[in-house]
Image (cartoon, rainbow, N blue to C red):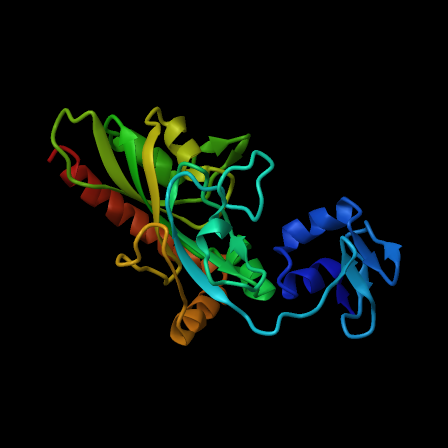
Length: 267
């Protein structure tokens, strides 16, 4: 017996959080009975589990798709405003896969889609602290105080963000825009954009360049590929780390990044 939202996630229907929402909306039944209670358990092998009347079955095989998302696409399977979604870019992928985390409409870069519910849950759970790395272009040039605030954490919706890796890249003095490399270990809504807004330097362009150990600078915008077995294993290994260990490593990295930034910020 397992929690119903875990069964739905393992079947590749949605992330665990999205599966919980399906239950709350009354779209999930077990043996003909609508289930809304999130703690409900079921037996995937014995019970008749359905979503919107369709029988839930485990996926025939797991798919791991790495997409270079361009601007102008929504990170969801469907959009009530009828905007293009990232699924529109996955020509040839017939399995039910869903995005792991989000990139907003105007953001771009690497996005993982899968039907492996267990791995998706571990990648998005803050306990594992899997890093995401972003190239960020902002208005103006953040000073040392701004960079310290970003790396140490800023308040968003009354809660401070976790420590982040921040590196200001070389730029011309007096430039109208500047670029940073920002590494975060949590996935709050529009987190990087809101962090930059909080220090008075709104984002002009945001591109995710790494998800844990995954990088692919050769993958063109709008294109996708399957992960290799080695890449899947490295992702699985990354989710086995505890956030305390990640945070400790990040802390020492921050001071080094800040030192480098102060030396290069007027270049």
